[in-house]
Structure formats: C-alpha cells, structure tokens
Amino acid sequence: MIIQKTEKKPFVWKEYQKEIADDHYYFVRSCIRQNFFPGAEEVFIRIIGKDLGKDIYHDKEHTTCTGIGYHVDLVKLETTMTVVARQFALMTAAGYKNLLVSCVTSFGLYNEILAIWEENPEIEDKIREYLYKATRKTFEIPENLVHASDLIYKYKDEIAARASFKLVNSETGEPLRVIDHIGCHYAKMFPDKGIGGAEYPRVLSGLIESLGGKIIDYPERRMCCGFGFRQYFLKSSRGYSLSCSYKKFKALEPYKPDFIITNCPGCNYFLDRWQYVISDIKGETYGEDGNGIPVLTYEEVAALSLGYNPWMIGLQMHQTAVEPLLNKIGIEFSPADKYKGYSGRQLDRPKIPELLKAY
Amino acid sequence: MGKLYDRLKEDVRFVHGLHSCINCGTCTAICPAASFWDYDPREIVDLLQVEDDNIVEDLLKGEKIWYCGQCMSCKTRCPRDNTPGMIIQALRNLSIDTGFYMYSSRGRQMFALKKLIGDTILAKGYCVHADDIDTSLFPEQGPIWDWIKKNRGEVYNKFGNSYNRIGDGALRKISENALHELNEIFRITGSTQRFNQIENDAAKYARNTNIDFDSSVCSDYFLQSYSNTNDNTEN
Image 1 (cartoon, rainbow over the protein chains, first blue to last red):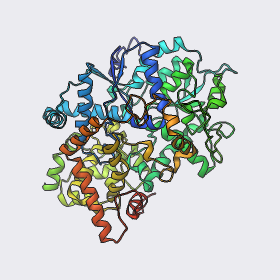
Image 2: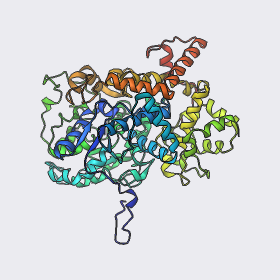
Image 3: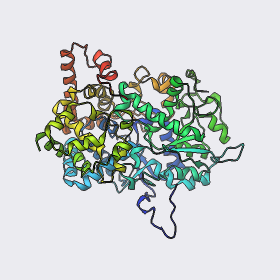
C-alpha cells in the first residue's frame, strides 16, 4: 500500500520528501558499478549532463570511499571518515556544494558519517586534523547529499516527456510488471534521507509509474539481497548471500515480473548473477521459456526509454539476458552488435550457461 | 564494568548503537543473518547490557559477532532506536584491536579479506578492481565475466575510454598523487598498522599450525582462510 497525501493528511509524506538540489553536482563514482555495470554510470552522466543540461562534475582525483573495506571491518572508522573528508575537500576545491553519490553503500556511509559529526563535533575536528596532516586539504560539509537515483526520480517526468518508449508491452498494451529493489543502505539507516523512507520507498516506483509501468508489491520486497559484505567475499559464507536472494526470487516468482529495477550497485550485481547460479545448481529459472528476469538499474531503465542503444549502455555485461525485455517493449536492437568492442571489432562470444538462456 | 566494556564505550558506534534495549527481539525477527545462522542480535545486545568483561571477552573470541551481514535492517525497526549492526561493528573492531579475533575461525578470515579488498584499495584506489577478480575465486560471476576479463580493454573503454589510464571514465587509473594521499590517510589513521597486524598474526598462526604461508592469494593459508571455517553452525 502506498500512502498518499490527502487533505486530511497533508504532511503524511513530509518526513520523507527529500530536498534535492536543482543543479551543479559534484559526482563520486561507485567501485562496483565501474567494474560490473560501467555503462550505467556513463549513461547517467549523459542523461543528467547532456539530455537534461545540468552541470555535473566528475573529478578524476577522487578514490573509493572505502565503504566495502569498512563494512568488512578491515578499514577503521577514522580512516573511512578521513577518506570521505578528502572527497568533501575535492568537492569544495572544485567549487561545488552538492555531492552526488553513485553508490548506495557510499551514500549510507556519508549519511552515517555526517550524523556522527553532527552529534559528536569533536570527532569531525579530529578528522579535519587527520586530513590536513595527510593531504594539507580542508573542506566544507556538502549542503545537499544526493544519491544518483534521487536525481533520476526528481527529473522522472522530464525523462518521461522525452521518452521514445514506455514501459508497456508493445503487443498487449498492458503496463510492464516491475519489481523494485531499493538496497538496504539507501534508507534503512536514515529513512528521512531517502525518497519514501525505508517502509514505503518511492525512489524507483515513482520512475516506473512515470514511464507507464506497474510496480508489484510482494512479501519480501524490503528483504536484503544478501550482499553481507564479508559474507559474500568469503567463499565459506557465500551461501548466506545466495540464500537471501533465493528467498526473494521464490517470493516474487508467482507475480511473474517482466523485470527488476535496482537502486544499489551490489543488489544489481547479485540479483543478476545469482539467477545464473540458481539455474545451474537448482535447475530453476524465473522468467519465461528458460529466460531469467532482467535486472536493470534506474538509469538503464531511463536510458532505454529515452531510446539509447542497449549495447552502448552496457547491457551486454549482464549475465541475465535483457533481450526478452527489449522485445516486450518493442525496442529494436542489433544482435550482431552486442559483442562488439570499443574498436568496433567483433569479439568472441561468451560461453552460454547450461540452463539460463543467453543470446 | 571493566576494561573491555570501557573500550567498547569509547567507540562512537557502540554509543550511538545502544541506548536501552527492551529485549523485544524485533532485530532478530528482521535479521537476515538470524534466519540463516544460529545468530541472535537480541541475545548479543542483552548480554552486553550486563557490562561484564568476561562476557565481552567471550564475544570477542567467539564466532557469533562475525555473522552479521551489515544490512542495518535492525536500525529501521528497533522501537528504541538501537542498532545492533553498529554494536557488532564496535565488537569486531575491538576484537581485532585486542587480537582476540585470532581465536575464532571467522575472525581469522580477516586475512583473506585483507588480501581481497585491502590490498586493492591501497594499490589501485578501488575496493574491487576487474584486474583482480576472476571466476576461480568468484565462479558466480559467470561466463559473462570470463568474456569481460578476456576483452577488458575493448569492453571498459566503451565507457569513457580511460581503462587503467588517467582520465575520467570507468575504471580510470587513480593518479599517483591521489593514491599517495589515500595511503597517507591510512597510515595516519591506523589502518595501515591494522593491515600489518593482520598479515603478521596470520603468518604467526600459519607457522604454529604448519600451514604453507606467503603473502599472496595462492598460499594454502589464504585458500583455507577464504574457503573454510571450523564451526558448523549453519542451519
């Protein structure tokens, strides 16, 4: 159930109506996205910068925020806070005040650090000392902390107005059925920092509805994908990660979704890859005719609607094939171009999984 | 109250994470790790409220603190605004600082995590990097990853054309200056010392248990740390 504002309850959403700056963003990239879905980040920059004409600055001097290292207990809190302070310093030096974050783990961590500093200003002072000692840098706190999906949400109606394709089955005219997966660190820690909070997340469902699709509510909608940080990286506990995703797939399977939209780099990776693993070890696939359920990020969905070539936004890097979705929407694409490289050369084709269909 | 509990209270995550637990068990009900392992965040928070150093030491030496997946679902739902996931962060941090992490098989896995993530952060400026990931350690990456790896220049350069080179595209090379500053931050804030401690503790443990050890991801010790644990508490 989605709570709507009414005359009697005009402020029911107030807590979760997030302020999002209109323009001028300092962009920090995601480690996971650059490795596994780099086209998503690239097309995000293009949509915001070129299509919507906003000022988005991507600085080659920033590094990882160390978020994964922090959550596997390897990198100390003081270190992570100082690395994040360095990102703030780079933003300040570049003349920006709005920090635009490409990763949900980073976004949660930035929020956590700012909350700690607000309650314990002596810790912020200590971090400023560490940063100056290590780099001679100083910084201002961002005025506005925005996750990349917040921005796509903010401009969803502009994107919809420019869309070449709606999220509608081109044969039946029915809205596509979509599962949204928000990612725990977007709003579970600080619900007021996310659109819709943790319980009634709107950040993805708002985009889907603007583009003509239909969101499915299902029993494990808020369940973690199972990344678990150390639990995934260590082979001995990877079953935890797989089991969490399996629980979600079994819960969403009866609703026959056309695709899954994700908010978080890790979730996108796991919901994509675990379908291959589940097909291999359990003999189960969750799409039609041996296909999986395509798993797309918010900007991949926006980009397809805007008419971007699926292979220029990196959809060939997904293990779970996206072709069934492209066909449903009626997007024309060249199968021959899927495995062409940067030089235009036709590359060898990847091996085909035993059960999960690939093209 | 004793020394270990005092040290826990020095960690801001412990202070922010534990206000007053009413032992309702909501955290355990929502916890994915509790549904998978014999793990109960409510029990851990309840034990800590006794403020007994013997109990704290048992936790620091034990397996249970390593089960949490850090999803922080507990923070959303706790009716008293506690965060068992942050308490776990403080416990793990103290377990490493005191050396007690070497008493548990899951604690000793810090070495594998240091090799997989820590070394990449300091060498490349990313938490993970395609050059360091393959399907022998991560088979779930699937055949698409073998294809990406084999053709990585051709694939990554489609997205910003700066793979492993200075630029602003995907997987750009992080500049020497940025890497130097990152390493300086690690040194000044204590994480370099932590990394060295984890390496030294692992080498010592390998010597004492006659396991082949070198600092690579190929040694028997790494593979044992990465693959195996000695406890059997999976449900």
